[in-house]
Length: 87
Image (cartoon, rainbow, N blue to C red; front, side, top):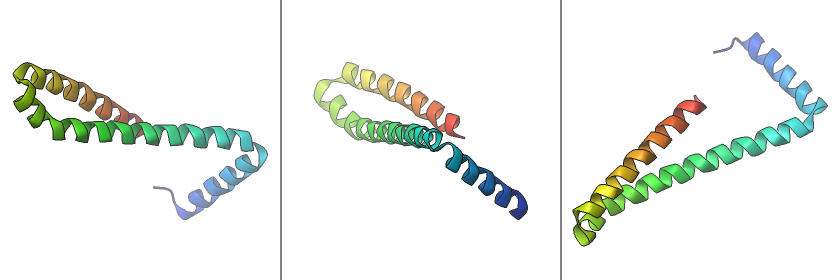
């Protein structure tokens, strides 16, 4: 955590950069929005897969349920990797 003086200085530098290079900030904002959107889609996919896994297993059989489980594991890995890249 930054001290008040460091935070003030950081805000000042950010403001100067925004004024001197607005194109950079617009690219950065687009990139951030796409990352947030990607994270939301991964989370939505996880919820849908977990919710449908029991029904698919009962209706389509165990092999299909196993495929869903593998897809869920892959999705969990992607979500974990994505979340740790943001930190």
